[in-house]
Length: 266
Length: 266
DNA sequence: GCAATAGTGTCTCTCAGACATTATGGT
DNA sequence: ACCATAATGTCTGAGAGACACTATTGC
Image (cartoon, rainbow over all chains, first blue to last red; front, side):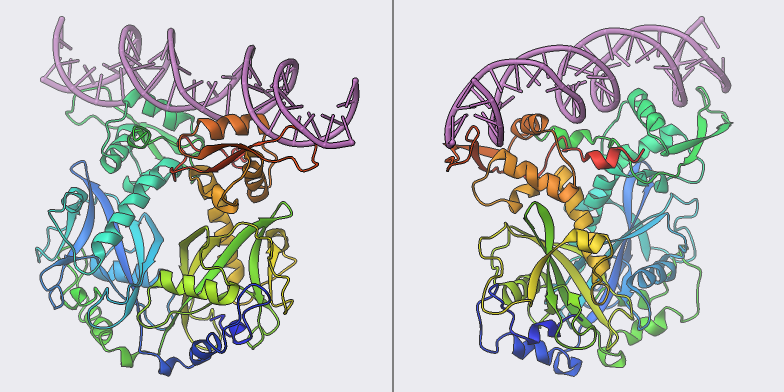
């Protein structure tokens, strides 16, 4: 833990000398039993888009504290597993999703009172899954649910612990990443139309992007999307059938795809 | 800690039923004594610019493991302090800097073997300080030192633990944030010239930005810098005295200030 | 005067926003 | 024919890169 470096005098002109202040707690830190135990957990903000809305997966708690409140899926990190593994495992255990379209660290939350029982430091993750055909209609019900983020952002729904903050951070990260990365394709299934992709941006940003300009932008951005050379079979639907595309090799969008709601804040 | 939500059957159609698999470890997680202890630490990548080079503060370790190796300043999070407080405290203890120009979370590192003694999850922070007049010339020496990041990026210098990765992530974050935020001003003292600010970008990005275009850009970006109406006293130096500026109220740069080394990768 | 640094003006090219127009399917 | 959706084309203005030019100091 890179700590006893400060067993020595932490100064060298940089720090004023404090007699033993740093040496005390730092030395004790080597003995983990001298500390109250700290739990390390992961919490996952799994996002998807259905009915044109950005939604996140919430789970209803069955135990106190926050019994019957909605919370993010998550759990403790096990010995001998990495943080990423823990996030993947919890995601699989609580949702059955083993191959999320995206899974990345978000931030870590460690306020001493964020869990009323014991100190728990939780590493927040955010994940993306396409809108699957069987989202939740199974045997059970009202246990896990994709909830529109509008419910959170309007304050109509409050989550357990500090999960409101974690969810808000994840949504903010998603809105930013859509500008500079190709991550929007992770919300789509393996084949999609440009309209599908545009609807991802519109759902996450709450915008109505100009279809013509959007089409030009994504086509000229190298590596964003690659054509499949096939058209979407127009099953009874009116209108010209759209070309089908798949995610390209690039992960960055240069130049970025501007979020119009950002610029108007000036 | 947002866990016993999964004491119930984590399915609802989303997950295939696994008999007791989730309930087992999750329930045990409530009892911290059934786990080997996990340490939670913070490590700080403190950056500054001197001699036109981006540098980070490193501390020479006096104890094994990695004795005599360079490492990031950091230490364990104490009970009843937040992660941010721990980062601030460690920064003050090991460098004497109590008011860094910037301090923000970076990412969290939790590989089970990242510390050979016990499991330690560390929350990485990155911080910025202006180039102070008395950087380290004090009583002691060779204890803490601002090392050019080129030493790390060329592989000439290897750090203890996984600190190479943490430092690389911090440098990457700084390079990205300079594009979209006004954080470059944190490298400058309270009064600075536009040339000073440009040298920050050139040092962090390893570029040579066009002075004329840079000047136009930062002046038209609202809230980036505010004029003081005074000029830098030209103490014997040749050339037209530069106007003095201070950091403005904005924290975002819209539109972004492009890093030319990014675009040429196409 | 010259050197050195700060700051302005101008040209061009890329690109984003607005919106008209064409293309291709359904009914 | 008409409607609906997909895709292309065109105009305009903002802004970035390149670089010429002016401004203000020390020597």
